[in-house]
Length: 320
Length: 98
Image 1 (tube, chains in turn brown, blue):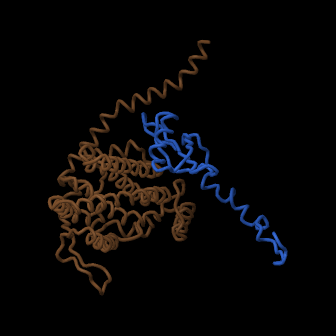
Image 2: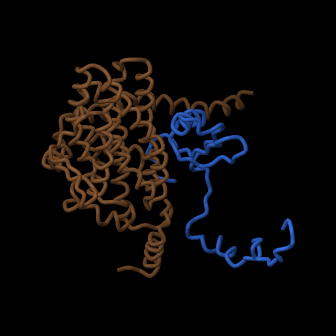
Image 3: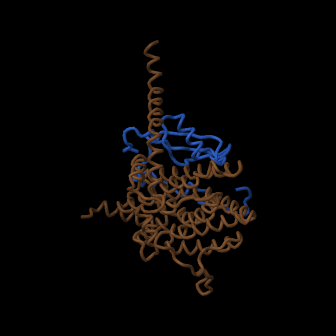
């Protein structure tokens, strides 16, 4: 049973989307639109937060003060990106606490890429170049997403993400100018991350359950396959400039379609990693849970301090 | 602005002045235990790259906002008052400085 006022609200929502205007937090929105956004933004925020771990592991082992300062700044940015996105998600009526709990209880997901280990220092460069490169492909169109707070968060993220990709490329380029052992380390790292990077765009369009509705609502602007193609086309000349080989013998330019043909990643592996059986799933979530639980006393102490600050002036007045 | 669970730090809205001469502009929100921590957190979250020279933080529950339902009564009356805009008036092209 749809009542007349509800129909008017829905019509106003649809009209806003049709004008390519943004939906703002206090506007009426269909429950499924809200739920889809919560799922997507939460997953995105969790990815930024979990994404601090693989690279954070190398901060103490960065080979110079310059590289350490860069890596620290980058990992701090990931924390910041997580916070922008959590804020955007909270405008949809979920609490930060609920989001954190759903992550550490495994009820909300994060990008499968962060369930792969960082085995060598070259991985810091490869993550910047390939993983952040893929993230940029995903995120730039999201600056125009239909939900205002999400789009605004993405604009901030994208501005900072460019530094991430460039520092990664520069790191790899420096290693490629080094010794044979360093070049081999870069190639080995690229070989490991190429396929998981392709998976970052999600399953092929034919198997993506959310894409059609998300595009109709203007939450997503491009399909998974379109973005994956764009990423491959963008990356091939960069790989050439670096002097690394992308580990796909069937990767060739196709004049007819004006893009590269390439091999699909192993989608069975993708499903395994998403469903929890990746190399680092348990470790990543356990680490996040430990950080949250170890920080409980800090949160409590700060709240207690704030309460006392509020009470103190009144007590002083009472005494005098 | 309701629904914060027990024990969760309050939500603050953050406004940053990009440089001298500009207004403070809303940039986002964050949680903090108190006002001072909100300013420090805002510095770390929203001004890592010289984005600002001044920060305001305001507890979200202290903000009074117009409701989307009031959109018409609040803003529609301005719609038909075109005479409030300079382009409403026809001035001959050869009149200078106008």
